[in-house]
Length: 248
Image 1: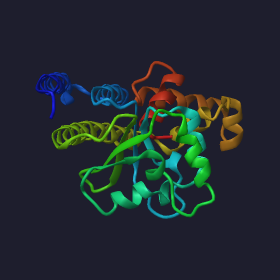
Image 2: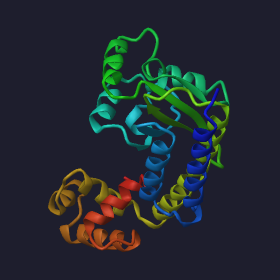
Image 3: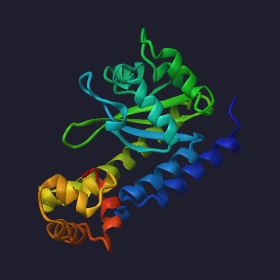
C-alpha cells in the first residue's frame, strides 16, 4: 500500500517544479542544464545524460554527448571503452518507444566485449546503480537518449508518466537551443569557426595564422567579427558560447 500523504507531497512538489519550468523563457543550453539538474533531483536521481543515438560503428560516446552531469573522468573513460554504440541501452531504445529502467552497468555495457569488466568497474562506485532512459526525437527526426541515473528504485506508472512528460518538455526546450546554434553557424564564416576551434585548442593568434596560412592581423579580425556575431564581450566568451552551441 502506498502512503497517501507521501503520494500527495510528491504530486505537489512535481506540480511546483512544472510551474517553475517556463520553457518559453529558457533560451540557452546552460539554462536547460540547470533545469535538468532540478529534474534529476526532483525525481530522486543523482546524475543525468542526454546523447545523440549513434549510427555506425565509428560513433564515439563523447562525440554524441550533448548534456551531462556525469563526472568528467567517467565520461572520458567510458568514451575510451568504446561500447556506447553497441550498448544494451542503445539496442533496446531502438526497439521501443517506452521508457526503460534497469541496472546501469548492464544497460551501458555491451555483451561479449573485452571492455565489459572495465565498464562494470567504472560505474561500480558512482552511486548510479539504476538508470531510467527514454528515446526522444527532434522535429526533424534525429534520435536522442535521455538518461537519469541513481540508486533509487523503479518509478511506478504514475511517476513514469510524469517523468516522461517532464523530459519531453525539457528536450523540446533543448531543441530550441540547437536552432539558435544553427542560426549562429549560418552567420559565422568558415574561417571564423576555424579560428575559434584552434583557439579552443589552446593556439595563439600567431600560431593560428601559421596553421591557416594567413596574417595574425587577419586572425584578429576574424575573432572580432565572430565575437560580435556570437553576442560576446571577448574572445574567451565567444569560444565558450561556440562550444555550448556545438559550433566547434
